Length: 467
Image (cartoon, rainbow, N blue to C red):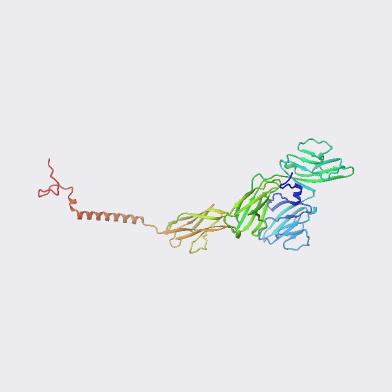
């Protein structure tokens, strides 16, 4: 099989001499298995190094039984093959078979010792080949002599396991295995259990020649990479996360910005990888609204390079209309983030009079944040101290936005007094209107009385009633 770009798997591994198994945690620290190749270079990472660590020490073997191999503070007899990178990780060049074994990194804190253990396996095989689950692989028996009378393949140590296949002897048939050119071994329908060391022996009249191949059966991730952005613990730096789980061995992930890899960029503060996730921590001074970052994934048995993107944005805010609170009552002010990547941190300030004083929850103030909504509740409103405008501040590594939320505090109104005043005013209005009408038209008072007057005359223009 060929890798992307037509590269043979064996040639690919000459350049790629390292692949890692999943780091796992236990009660004492973390563990990891790393593969290197004789003559190559390996970097043993001291993972999760704390900034408070005063010293990083490397041991080859049990740290309780062997002296230190290297330290960030103590000078040991020089060995040009060993060096520290970033004052924590151990680089070994010109790998030898005797370098294989267990390595322990200890970061010394004031009160606690943290350990990270690495098992280094140095491949002694002449060739390493990657296959894909379900695919087909051809293991070459290189440098086969024409004088060879027989070619035999073994899975595992040829001195401990029976032959797997032979050019002369018939073994129980397995349709997945066959010989090509009477020497190379073809395996179809690759399975995970096919992974391991294979040895080809060509039998001559006087000498047995061997060629060893290590087969790694890879399984690419089935899903697509997933990207997201977060703020650092300080809130001032941007962290870009890219995850592509489910593959074996683990994929390679790179963050890019405007088509360029970011690993060597000056504004990258740190770059860390842990199994299937790659994280870049960036200085916020180079960030801008709607800048797009792209994560590209690659795998040893995948020709395509899937990707995902993250667009960072300034936070945008909205609030409810101005609120009114009666003295002694409670009121809640609401502030909502409608947009922002990564998520913004919301805080409340007292306003123009004290613009730098952040309101802390407690006492008469209750602050509750649910998702992108923050609510400030003021208990027992006071006209002298609580009235005015409050500032809702939203900040992420891209920038900050502020929004004024105003509150008016009023004295409570005496409802009984208001109702009494309205009744009195209504009666006064009625009496006034009645007095005016009677003053200007007194004859209205005579309506409804006896129509015959004492003088036998009728009032007005009314006519007498006759039966």
